[in-house]
Image (cartoon, rainbow, N blue to C red; front, side, top):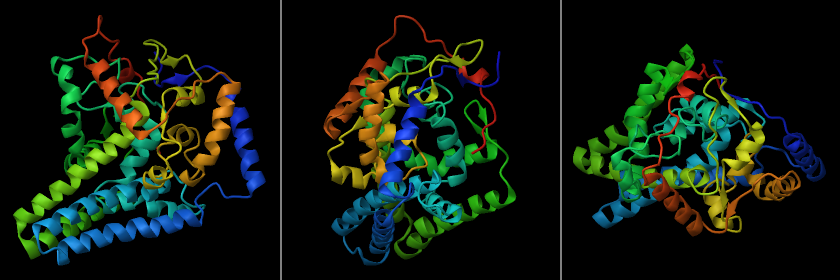
Length: 374
């Protein structure tokens, strides 16, 4: 038995696609990273988040004003994550490594951890997409069944009904428990994470202290603890639903595949790039406002194939990727609208809620995990 899951098939698809994408950038003379549009969007998103926070802390004088401020702050927190942090953490924001780190570090300033994101998201999710136990985006501690390879439990029959309430807890659970468990336990499920360097430990703990100071302690000093806890929880409930829905639409849906490694060799009988396309679904290509708001994450196929290219280029690249997929007989799937994509996700949840005829081949990936470094 090997220690690492491997994609063993070879395909001319990705070399050909990369050549076409290289040709696009050579012709347009555009940088692969962000352009002035991304820098302007960064200013809008970060200013909006700070403005929402300041409004809540110093200017909201009624329950109605507080509710409006909570909604605005929760949404703008997602905008920063989708548009600024995500590109930065992937090294796609700028050609400057320091600027990429700074933009990725906005996650820490909103309660998360860029150090953990780079290992769990960049290292695991982007390598082992939809591979049970290794793709941490599929894991919910058994609360939901998001892959046909996961064990069915009695309560899963109700998951289409409790999915949204559970999604709402996503960022709340993230900032109060999951980061600490992964950081100090050095594990992401069956995968051992690398030992953090001293600077990363200082950055992790310093950002956590700063976050709790501005998000909870300062507002509680002004308004009292109970009002602040209520507003804080509401912000995370909003952010949790928005973030979860956007990310679930790409992989936990109809018309995508769930590769299963061979139990003995750890081999996946597919090429990595082909698997990235076929485990991912796009949606709402024509909705420019939606694309702007969610950082091009309705073009997840393009993102998975080229994570170090900024999302501002995805609409143009999608035409190239779609044509290459057609030429190489690779299944490229895109839901026409956001509504259709949400409906497909909940149909998938209903499919996974049904008791399967036979149990899944569980426990394969945990024996094939290896140490992950970003």
